[in-house]
Length: 509
Image (tube, rainbow, N blue to C red; front, side, top):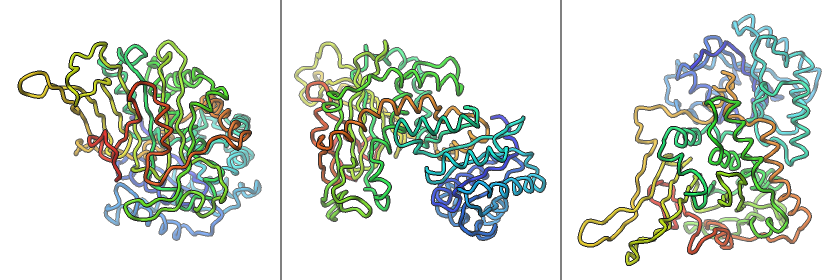
């Protein structure tokens, strides 16, 4: 790994939950791994009234709760906390940014950070157009041989029009290589391992096409409801919250062509080609191949659970989806007519994210009398979380007379790497932003292409208020009608369990 330049990380919205639960704990983990630069400062910026000491005290509480190194000696935590500073300004007032410029100059002179700045927007989305513009007014966007980068959290727009507008505004003051659009899913180790699985193993790549793959499933299930986010979620929904960003990014990694090199531009170029090749959905496609649902009241493990419309902050007549399942196609030579099935939902039986590759069955089933063994083809499961790992299902002969076949698992779990440190998603993504490696960040053209695919679905639901919205009980796998999406006799969605190897059954964990 190349050496990181000395720098200041400026976090806007530093008094908020993301900084407390994710960002500062991840920075401390980087500190413990000796991955921070020699001269490093984190400057928190927000409206809230904190001193340096009170801000540090709050952040230490976050480290003790959420860091992977939360049991570190107090002396190490205190030494790290000395790198944290705070500035209170009105972030939506242009004139207040002169105070930020003065503070950065002071820290540069005291801490030797050499005028290198990484800006992180952990703020409400309405500030995304404002903060970069106000920084540019102070000249803080001009690199001139220094680090000038800006990291923006999702959601990046609420529809295609707003995403294009936001991109256009950023590119008026910044180069594309200065803009880092965050998608924390891409920071997960198992997501990155998908590239290695595909392109370092000659056993997979020749099979990774329409000739050998029957269909692909991508699932992101959550066992909780909207909790206290009802007011936000009711204006977002599962399509915007999960599919437009996280799950389409996973689709791109599954479907992309091999890059010429493992580098930011090469990988992101191939991902863009996937988005451009996704078959646009007609209104008939949306009606038949997109299913939305909303969780309803039910008992889970004997405890009554609220339906979505009963959640705090949710419109009692809301038609916002908490579940989406859809079928799409990538129209290129590799994937012609191979269906990709994507689903996500809240209040499902378990919290799990995974990619499932369903290979075609053998052309002739020789073991026809083996009723216990259903030869629907081998299955490769790439588990993103929890119990991260890879599982291959294959048929094996049961010892004894005859040819009785049983499906068995060949699996690897990251938990088996007992002496290997597995960094968290934010830890990896923060490090990459400091290094200037944008491989795991979303490029503007790819983000707009993803919105371009999703927008007709949003428009159809907006213009057809009576479009089907299926209820499903809390703790179930979503609307029953979703099973009808899967093409093929007796084929259905895979029902995963929390543990990677205990699968193939309906489970509630």
